[in-house]
Length: 382
Image (cartoon, rainbow, N blue to C red; front, side, top):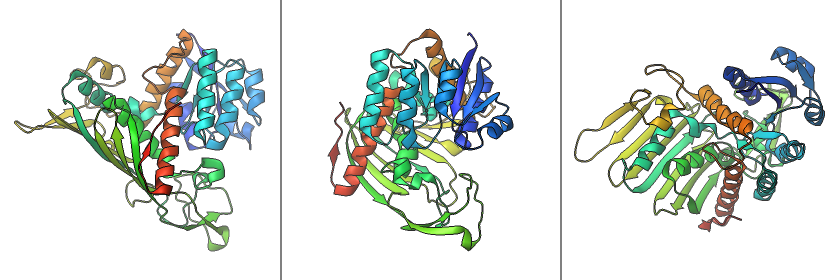
């Protein structure tokens, strides 16, 4: 591949993770970053040649092939549209925007102008998630009857835990589902090939008020501050939810999403029940996939490229017995994106384009509507 030039907007936890994964590809050079504060210091700390306080200046001056957007959700629409209007390919963190209407506008612009886009639903590129998808496609599981699971974290467990994701002005109307529930349903729809057509949601806010730090702290840092360093504020978004799904292929589904579940740092569980067999994947045992049968022995399928499906092998970098996880899914996702950038191929692909970003925003809005009305709500795309 040719050498690619890219810029990263926002360099908190996830922005730094993007830079690390991009460097692992070898053919992508992070030539600049943009940050509202201390851009040059952050660029120096991350060994990036140039830091810009204004992302527009970075895009205008650096002749980028692509830009990565790693900022709070409320900024995504403006930044992505600006980059696309300059003809720059865009990889954006999820959720794509704060409203489905914004996401639809981005999707439509990308379609009309053949811009290569990606939303960082990186977890669909975990080897065992891909293996589950390939086993479903091959008929190994039979017709999918039901799917259940969870996505659990504990970084919002205490009332002194705070993040911009709890501020609807920055995150939108959802916290937990938009942040991590979106990953879960994206993986499930990718694996099963079925789309959710109806949802019923129950939301809860475990801490109705939280103590917001008066000084900056990093997400996941667990940093303790003194009482005088906090300001108590009301919280109006969920940190827990359970959602029921009806899928267009006849399957039923349910997931529980929580960011206030003590001891679980970042655990995803997906369980599929089919007419032939069942599959169960737990991200805390991420290199193992359990297959259950009625008539014979159950099976533990390990991540080993020599025994898995061809499409699975394409997202595996290391031999059997060598663990791959969260950072590797970023590398695989970015590799697919940049292959499309080089080919100037803006069609819907196996990574999540802005089409998938719109889909997840639409689902999120309908799920929030269901939680408010306490009724089943249909998913109707535009």
